Every structure is written in structure tokens, then in C-alpha cells.
Amino acid sequence: MILTSYHQQPQALRQAARSGRFTQPTAGHAPGYLQANLMIVPQAQAFDFLLFCQRNPKACPLIEVLEPGATAPACASGASIATDIPGYRVYRDGEFSEERAEVAALWQPDFVSFLIGCSFSFEAALAQAGIALRHVVQGRNVAMYRTNLPCVPAGPFSGETVVSMRPIRSRDVAKVAEISGRFPLAHGAPLHVGNPQALGIADLSRPDYGDAVEILDDEVPVFWACGVTPQWVAQRSRLPLCITHAPGKMFVTDLMG
Amino acid sequence: MILTSYHQQPQALRQAARSGRFTQPTAGHAPGYLQANLMIVPQAQAFDFLLFCQRNPKACPLIEVLEPGATAPACASGASIATDIPGYRVYRDGEFSEERAEVAALWQPDFVSFLIGCSFSFEAALAQAGIALRHVVQGRNVAMYRTNLPCVPAGPFSGETVVSMRPIRSRDVAKVAEISGRFPLAHGAPLHVGNPQALGIADLSRPDYGDAVEILDDEVPVFWACGVTPQWVAQRSRLPLCITHAPGKMFVTDLMG
Image (cartoon, rainbow over all chains, first blue to last red; front, side):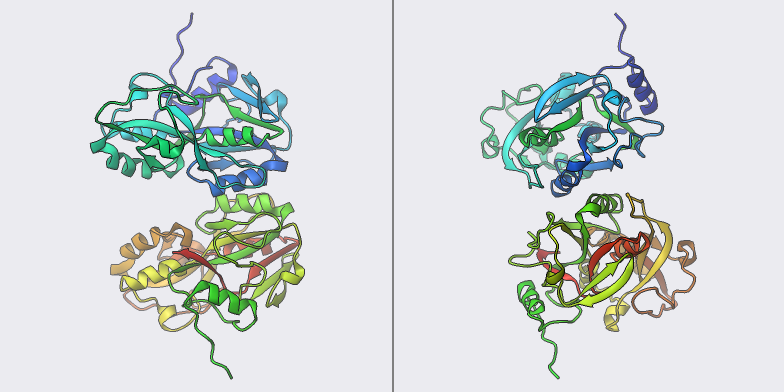
């Protein structure tokens, strides 16, 4: 068995993903660089999806939108969006269809690629401020929940907001809100603090995505809009075709967060 | 001759514009409410124009984008985008075609309306902070200039940024940058301070749009991205059809700036 290689530089990581040598989640790699959720939709749905992002900027903060058919993002030198992510998922008619190592073989001239910010940037800033995040410490994926908070719809795209949850000590909640608020491309400040029932979340120990984490007595659950929202909305909307990154396997840009 | 009526409330102003009783510029009316530039393009160009706005957020801060064919914006109760502005301009193949009191008679089911923030919000905040703006004091339109700063292109949309200029006392420049930076929907912080030659502006006394104002010895010219940029870009790009508000005659929303 070969140990997974560690990549300091975005370009090296993307090259390793392209060649099939790197197939792991990207968290912790290329520290300091913005990582992005990927959403590819056909041009026929691209205006409506772009409008959906514009209307729901906390869940869908846009880092870059490529021209129809284009695979070379401006935010990543020499990269191809179709090969440089460690894993892709294809959805057809709103149902998960397959997981693939690349989507170059499926590529169509009408594919429009959206790169959407993810929370890794503010998590790094919280860590630097001395705020430990349980899922990072425990090496788990963050806990994510579907809520009853409707997104602002756009064309066929409608559905509820998906949130990520991090347990935060009461004395740190304001600081955490302030720090994460400085990263609008990483979902910004929390949507909601405490009281999961008000979001329609019945049981924090059973997340819809990711892994559950314990909440200690001096902690409050803090909720952020999550980049899984557009995937959930695309499923709910029974989009004929969309392609996303595989969970935790993000597109790593050359931009500093 | 009838004196122009003054409107404190957005809804009253929009009703008066709709009925043809109010045909004046909207500056100073409905204080505290966000006013917006209007840009209408056919659906065939809507994705590219939305992408242009996403790529050039300082010139084109989006307040709202309506669904294709829709005339009722969420940001203005009971309003119609086709009748409630005191004046409209129609451009065909990039050339000015006509000025009209309404565009309901031209309306097509594929028209997509974009409401783009304007600088009135930060001007009001500057006035409240005790910073007098010469064009407001003198009752003139702000001075605007085409620059050599290229916008990030999107599809057929390309061209240079248009800026507005306000003379600011040296001791107030930092405060003005700080205050206007709090209003991203009103173009945010300045693009450029001093040195108009670096923007390709040869002569500040000859603006491309609006009225020239004097710059005193203790003042610096301060430049902001301007909502006229999309109109200039649509002209440069020879768009088959687009409709905008007439200069200074904005769409007044129910949103507080």
C-alpha cells in the first residue's frame, strides 16, 4: 500500500489528481489556497442556475463561472476542470448516476462550470485564532443537515438550504461569527446559532451528510449555509444532468483565501 | 407651469411615474431608499450579461434580476419595471434609438430585467458624515468618464469601465473610502484616487457623461466604478436590443440603503 502523498502546492495537487495518482479528499492540502465546490450544468439551465446563486449568495458564493464549454478556469493556472479534481459525481434526472475519476470523456460544448466557495477558508482562520473545530480535531467530515429554510427559487431551481454545523463554546460564538463573516466566499457569517428545531432539524446526532460530532455542555451548535445546497436543489429539481465534485474532493484554486 | 412634486415614499413616486405625472430625475427623492440602474436584455443574452455582472461586481452590483418576461420586482411592492421609471432609453444594435415614458408597449416575454445599484446610497451616507459633495451642492449631475480599465469580458460583453469622479479633501479621502466601502450595492470603495492620467482620462474638465465640477487646491479627484458601465459595454458590444433607464431617472426600490 502506498501512503497518500501530501501536496503543498495547488498545481502539484491538480496534476496528481489529473494523472490518477491522487484520489483523496483535499482538506488540509495546499493550505491557504481557496478550494471550491464544482457544479456543471448544461447551458440550457445555466442562466437559471447563475440566477439561483445570485439570489442565494450565502449558500452559493461564486468564485468563478466559466464560459459555455470552457474547461480552463482563470483561478487556476494550466488547470482543467474536467480532470483535475480527485473525484466527480454525475447526476441524471435528479438521481445519482455514477462516480468517476474524470469527466473529460463526457464533456459537451454546452457544459457550464460553476466554482462555489467552501468553508475550508474560514476554518483555517478560526484555527489560527485558537478555535479548535471538533470535526477537524477528530478527522471527520463536518456534519450537514437539510433544513426547512427555503432558498430563493430561480427558474426550475428550488429547495431548502443545507447547513453545516460546528459546536462552538458560548464565549467564542461572537468571535466565530465575526471571523467567518470576513470570508463571504466561504459562506460568511453563520445563518443560525442554537435551537436546531427552528431549522427543522429533529436530531443533531443524525446528520443528512457527513459525520455526527458530540456537543459539550458549554457549547452551542452554530450553523452555516453549506455548498451542498446546490447539489440538493439540483436533485430536488430533477435536473436532467449535472456534474459535481465528489464529497470532500474539491477543486483547489491558485487564489489565496 | 406646475412645480415638480416631491416624493418621500417610493410607492408614491413610482405611481406618479407610471401615470406620467412625474418625469424628473429621482435624486433626492425617497431619501434612504435604494435606487437602481435598469438594464433589460433579451433572454438570449441574459446568461452572458449576468455573468458580466458577476465578473464585474464593482461596476455592476446586482440588487435583483427578474425571471424572463417578469415585470414585478420583489424589491418594490406593486411595482412594474416597464412603467414605474420616469424615463427609459432604447438602444438597437448598440445605437441610441429613442427615449420613452414607458416600455410596456414594447414588452416581450423574453425580456430579462437587471436592477443594478447606484451611488446615491453612499452619497447620502457621506452627507450624513459631514462630507459635502460638490455636484450635490451645485445641483449638477456627477461627472463620469470612460477609462482605459478593461472590464472582465463575458460572452459578447466587453469594454472599459466607466467611473464617476468626486473631488474630496485630502484629509477626508480615507474616511470617504471607508464609508463608501460599506455600501457594496452602491459600487463600494473607490477604484482609484488621484492621477486621472493613469486611467486614461486626459482632461477632467471634459467628462464623457454628466457635468464637470471644479477641483480645489486641497482636493483630490476620487474615482468610483459607475453604473453607466453596462450601458457603455452594451453599446460597444453592439447588442441587438437593450433598454435602460434614462440618465438620472432611476428605479426607486422599497429597500433601505
